[in-house]
Image (tube, one colour):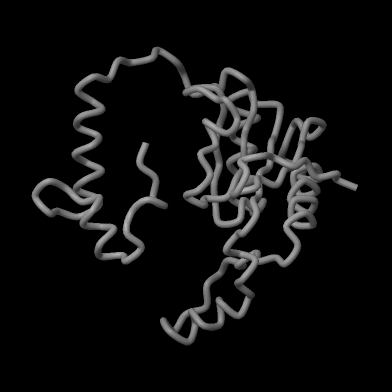
Length: 187
């Protein structure tokens, strides 16, 4: 398996290493890969309800292969990802739909070591406003203590009035060096 860690670190070199056979863009390469995938695709005959009744909220970090790390197969869970894996209003929206319309009952929250949000501040929004002339309406949701942010995210899920099931909410920190999860005590 090729990982991004084995590819060139220079952006242009990495793009060309992973580009298409005709030197196209990364998106062209993805479309070509989809064509190969679709050629052998067979409809698995499943619906949108996750088999295990669980929704996983995790960071968008490219180092997290959630299905492999958690032993999941296609159709086992709903996966909701964003920067930091923090529970925002949009995550609550997705969890609400997951629970109320598609039957999930459990929520697993996964943050990770070495997260980029640990090095950002809300000043990022000000920098964007200075650059583009408009302040973002969203918060950066940066943090300094990953364990505490997992606790905050668990609390946001447990106290949301929109969620039907808040009794099975657990939070973890994934170690990007070892691949192990460390459970966070919500207290």
